[in-house]
View 1 (cartoon, rainbow, N blue to C red):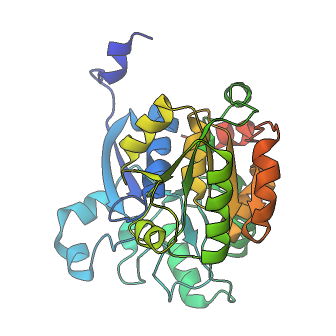
View 2 (cartoon, one colour):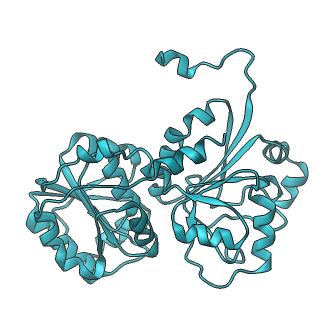
View 3 (cartoon, rainbow, N blue to C red):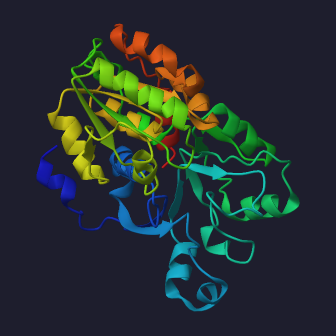
Length: 335
């Protein structure tokens, strides 16, 4: 296809109204921007048919008054396709609205018939309640098959009565076997690492950094969230580490131009490195990375076992990310 034809809208085509409930809007975690960048790339053929409106998930899309009076609320409600884009949005209890979809029973009507796209579970594990079921029944589509990140989320969604397919996170859909074969098996001279300021372990994280400093000539730190740098500053003996700006374009440019490995507790920081054909070790600190590793076969190491990192990075290992591309195609072909 001629490149110029990809940016042109054909006369006579129906323009669909498409809404993306976008996890990056108002987010303080650049991992959400990585998710959305991949979503735009992976469903471009769907998006090309319409006018796209981005609405937040972490913030309340509409308040009660806006639903009654704001033309945008009516536009969203009557749109042709609505995608709730992934991170940890599914919960057993919508009484909590910290990290998941931030709507209430009296503000959720514009989201009716929304389709989940690479969504996972949040940390809430209590028994589901009637209030949550009422909201999900109002907003989730029963016409389309939902895309979920892992099997645990599929089980949770099934308990609410919705059909889904495990596609993995959309950040993985572009990581093909061919791309994996281009990722080095041997250690680089340099490494970039991440930390999780919201889930610290000063002893284990210090140990990780010391292992990296002993084994690499150059060590870089990427700031993925607003809390990570403040945490980094509390860790001793880090003055000689170079810091990459907390900006996704800066991180992407760095990965494109430097020969580095990735090691860190930030899952999507690691996935972004893999997308750029870098050897990566994800340090597991929560169920999200563990659940995804079960399906997608990351090179994963528990933080409690960080002492084994020295052996891992000095050994040769392959990157064999598994993605069920048949499942991905099945989900995409609905539209």
